Image (cartoon, rainbow, N blue to C red; front, side, top):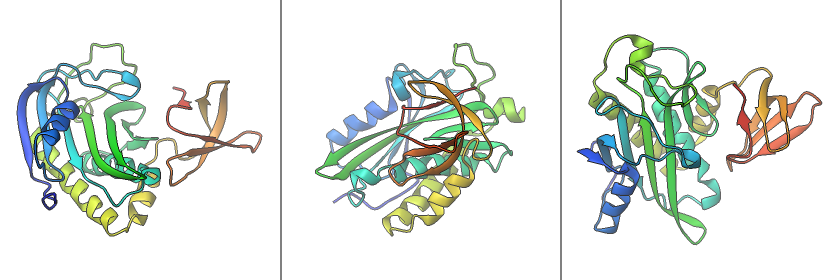
Length: 249
């Protein structure tokens, strides 16, 4: 049996290749309680979606991963974890300023700029999840960005002041624990509804691009599987899973 949930089980390490990989290795070597969190000042091989790397100045930002054992969640319903993680982050960021949103499926934006990326890696046992490791890169105190990433922003750039990273992390993990307990109780309505309220470009027509074309559409709904359903200008519904469609900036 895994130990009970504790949002404050946070381990700080100076440097690692990837907090997701580090935590996965920890889990192989012993019993690691749920919501155990590994936070580092620098990643030599931080991973993002689509194999992208994550730019982060040393000790400037939050680079962390935490583990869950959501054995009560069917693999086809794993999107609720993505909603939970992105919602916890955007809720805490919204205490600092307005303008934060969740870009489907789980990037965190401030206005038209990206402040956080999330990578969730799931293990399955049969049709159920057995282990989930969520890795987050959240730009806190970085003053400038040098990579060719199109639109990064940090909390420092938004507010003009440095923040205590450890306090921000504690608040985020408290929200994670709160929402995770709700999922355990099968009480997911609040997470789903609030996720939609924070959704990036949730109103109006916007430009999207799929493998065939660029088109104008509005967001109609997000299904329980995580499938994004758009309504285009000819009133046709278009459904997409992760990586099948992108927002045009």
